[in-house]
Image 1: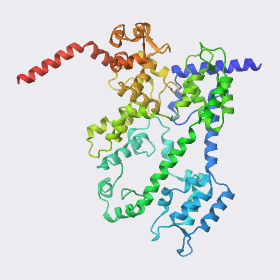
Image 2 (image 1 turned 90 degrees about the vertical axis):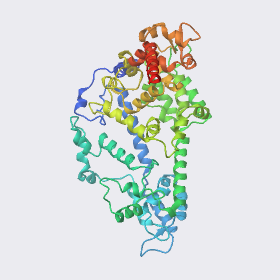
Image 3 (image 1 turned 60 degrees about the horizontal axis):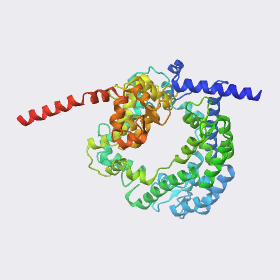
Length: 537
């Protein structure tokens, strides 16, 4: 009975996933429900139910860890009162930054999030001794992460949120709705236009041009005195020490968070032992596999730091064409090993490092900024493209919508492979997947980009492109261009070594790339004729 139940569950999982991977039939109920809502999974949708349970459990655990109980709040108040800094202002007890940090060290791990330079600066107003009110800080801690239901219901922004459920909402209504993508893009564009020195901050002079540029100097002075600023660009100049501490704390928090996610050697060895112990036969060649049930069992035994890897999303991401609905243990282990890591030599060898360093030039031209992947104008350009492609405004891209990318010349064969090989939702692509896609296409000379495209071209999942695969996309001429070690197949390494990877992939996936290659001799002749005409003149 138990075995039949497992087989039924696995068959259901395989069926649902294959429909999901291939697009399946689109659920037009999304015409009435905004994309940021997801329908509740049915009782027979086992994987979706488990994904929802895991997501909710992780969310509640994270939020509950942030909240302080009564005992912790009482202890915090006792420490603040003990470390107050005289003199008092009326009956208001105050505390300076040094004592503030001392309280933070004694208050416990759950309070660390409140004892940062940023929070101190936020509550610092006009005290001549550079102190903050203990009562104001305590109230800040009490309110953090809480909002009353009646405040939500009474807020006019709730109407704006509900309005976004209407998929036929006019362009004007979207632009006037604070929570819409066009509105976010508009505000971000305004910020970039005001930032004339391109340092990512607004000076008082730059902000004075906001709107019609009619703010009074008195009002602007108050803005820059009352708001949290950095060197006068939205902390006051005398607070350079506080600013430096803010940077240090921000960096320390980031590194702590990333270090907590990484597994040490002992934890990796234990994980490998558990995966090997729970492998699901039969093997594929020498490749050990594991099904979803055993995957979850390993997750329960692997420890808290490994929980982030044992989710339905990760399993679905690594699931390909196994008839038993299993994933490769080695692929999963490599995924865990790579997560959050990048080799220093890979950074130094990557051309992207030049783009990053280029942004230090404050006088960088507009054209250079737009061609630099890491710049704000480039990010705005890619996001704008995504919004323009999303014709039904559901926050996702269908295959038909993506087909209009660039010059709209992608082959149908390639688009089919994209939507089969990439992580999609009901046959549609989200923004994160789109970013990976654009990054690979715009940097086809890079080995990582070639790896991304190669995986899409390798329709048989063999790790190489044979004559059948290339005939599926193009013809045998590709072999003459690449000159692979094995005359019957092309590996990713062959493609990288040939220095023709960008040309080959363009031919296989883009009609324009194919046309340009086919007509290369004519184009060269035309260029030569044009040059000769210019010389004559």
